[in-house]
Every structure is written in C-alpha cells, then in structure tokens.
Length: 353
Image (cartoon, rainbow, N blue to C red; front, side, top):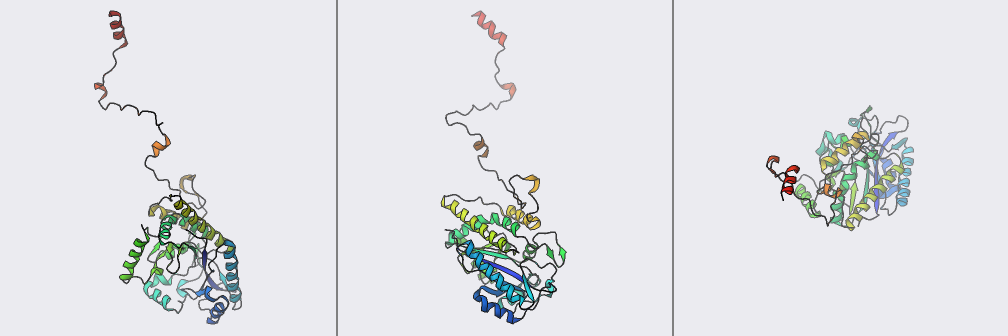
C-alpha cells in the first residue's frame, strides 16, 4: 500500500546578507559546522553556492513540519554567523550562472564533464518529496497514474520568474533550465516493474548511465529507497507551502492506491496532453485560467481533458431493457419505397365491397 511515510528534500542558495549576491565560494568551515549540527541531513549541492537538506523519515505532517523548521532554522543561523543567509527560491533573481563554481566532489565533477554547458547552467533549486511505497509493482502503477497531477503541483510551487536580472515571463524558469538536460520531463510509462528495470539495464549496459540516479524525470522510483520521488516542484519560499505540497502529493498517491484497492484506476492520459499542462503551469503558474473558460479547470490554468469514451452516447440515453429496438429504416431510395395508397382510392374500394 501507499504508506504515510514521507521525506522532504529542499535546496537553497547562499547569499551575502549585505549585497544579496550569491556567495560563489563559501568557507569549508561552514559546511563542517552544518555537518556537526545536522549530521547526515545536510550536503553540498552541485554548485558551491547551494546547500541541500532533507528531513528524517516522517509518519505525519506535524513531524515533518517540526523537522523541516529545525533544519531551516539551523541553516539560517549558521549562515548568519558567516555574514550569509539562505534563500528558498528556484532561481536567484540576478545571479550569473557562469560565475558559479562546481563543488569539488567526484560525482559533481563527472556530471560537469558529461553535461558541459548544460550542467554549468544548473543554478536552480528544487523541492523533492519522497513517499514510501514498498511494493515494486505498485510503485510503477502509481508512477503511471500520478503523472497527470504533476503540472498541478508545479503550478502551486512556481518561484523562479527571474534569470540573470531579467523577468523571463515564465513563472518557473527553472523548468526551462532543467529541461536542457537529458532524461528529464514527464516520466515514461511502464507496464510493470520488470519492464522498467529492463529499460534501465539497457542504459547501464550501454555505458550511458551508472544507475537510476541519472534519470531526472519529474517523478521517478528512487534509486536508494522504496519510494516514489516527486521532483517537478520549485523550491518553496515558505515552510507551509512546502508542507502543503507534500501533503497534497501524499494524498494523491493515497487516493490512487484506494482506487486500485477497489479495482479501479485513474485514466492514463497521453503524454502530449500532460506536457501541454506542464507548459501552462511553467508559463502561468496559478495566474491564468484554462483556455476558452473551461469550467472544469482550476486556477493553475491546467486544462481538464475530457476524452471520448466508447458507448458514451448510449450511456447518456439508455434504452429500457424491455424495449425493442426500433425497426431499421429502408436503405432504398425514396422513389422505390412502397407508399400508402391515396385515401380516396381506399374509400372507393370500401364502397365497392
């Protein structure tokens, strides 16, 4: 079943408190202080100007709130001692990505060598949510169905309209930057856990990826934990926004699991339709309604697709079971159909009789 166990990952920029500029090379002593206070719940990110934290495995929203508040408070207090502050936003409003330095770790150096300019532009921060799903087959089944809701979650989280001092016109420019990488976007659809593993094994055997951590889809089975990891959302500025999105994602998976328990499922929509909603969420966030005044749409502007179903017309106008179907009309031209005799001729025959 889809459990209530969850974990939240957040990424922040470190900025100078006086100038608000991104600090491209924070001191190593600050990271050591973080690790002393937070243990295994903090790590440097791809760029030295970023820091990543994650909560413990939580079983309730209150537990997640307490742990995330503690983590955010510790990050802020330690940074303040070095004249810095963290900001929770998916892009920095005016930072230059080409002035950032890559963290000196083997994995990040490998990514930089592989991705080149695309990787160096990753001055972006996101919110990732893990929901525990121990069963492999269920994890894949929910991956297929939950993809429909990803644009809605993105629309609720957008926090990156600015890039290098320019208003891009997009509510989430982070998505535009991240989509330059390979193996991103709406996840593929798989019939089973075995099919998913076979596709991964093909990439690994070809030497294209080392493991599934290189699958950067908006939603993916975690490589390290028995969870579904939602990755589409921007880093949220407020604590309550992060928690609300976490709760919504957990409820959606719980709803899909309950449908499956009742031998039902959510409709599987074509990827082109999901990607259209994804673009609208990236472009408008929650600022625009769906095109043509779609009454079923929400404030995110994501269209509510209504696909035709077989027998839909019959379902709208059912025929009683005891009613015979009407006789088929003749397909002969009208001139060949037998017509009734004129009324006057009928009267003559009756009088003659």
